[in-house]
Image 1 (spheres, rainbow, N blue to C red):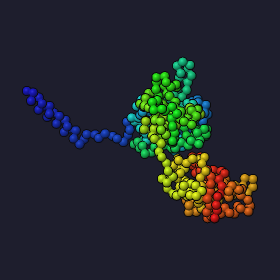
Image 2: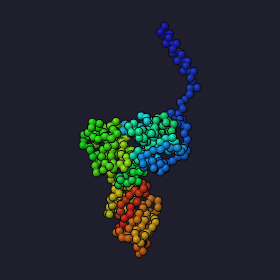
Image 3: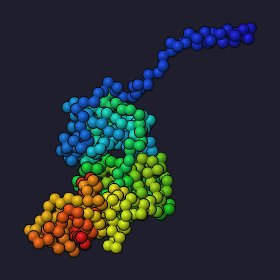
Image 4: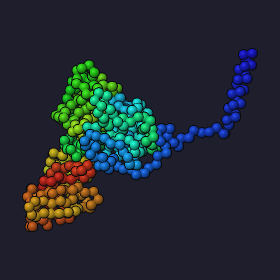
Length: 411
């Protein structure tokens, strides 16, 4: 009887399977099972435009409800995968970054790094927490009744976002943090919230035994987080902020020089680096100008050519306080002042064309002398010059010799 029952059961399964046949529906993978797939892109603002529009709320650490039908779009650069970023993601576009605060755990499951997201802002709260731009809901202090920008509910979030395409981590490359602009208010406002890397720094408290965020009372905590300072950098300007709930909270801090990547948020005028995982902490990479394209060592004896000078700044390894020498051909002359200032703004390149130029902003004549009516014509197209000065990245996009450079030779 048992054998007969098994035979009948097997025949039934075969019958049901054959009934499905070719008519069995394939799963629909065209739409994500997350978010609001009905959203369409319209009234899109960049994050930089959003910052301008709500500047008064951000700067005063207040908030307001978005009443206009506007949207933003960006790529996820950080989430809660390592337990250090709690109930929020960092979102970035080509113009800036912000935090999206959601009362939900496991965000990394459907919002991995590299996932592009469209967000409809109408009905959400926007404002500043310590002047850090955030999108979310309302937080009410249970003791004082005071309200501030906080997390939105997961149900509200579900109707306000749409996932675009598949996650692509190759879209996410950290910018190099410019340490020369550590206390620059404009740099702070433009870049807070971004994924960045600070190079060649040493944790002040690291001694081979201390951990990132102990909860044993050995280090002062704020909101269950430990702020770790860096050697030779004021803790009022920059700290590494780690939650006691982070997966790596009790890992020993390295004592050597490090390259540290993370979400560079702000609390008022202090940069706070939030690690995503412990992979964001790496030994400082040794750097040699010989690894860069182009030629030269940046010295008087072996000046850089223009290609290497540009590459040095682009690599993030340039010291904007150091004097270097660059040799090139004058390719464009914008202005030569022979009056009060006696300086000139012009460009040089390796081949004398405007294809790949280095700007010399308000530079001086031979050995730092001012330009005069007698010498202004020496600054002519096609002439070869060697210039000594300080290379900088101005405004985040323009590589130039900053004001005060001087021509060392001209031919």
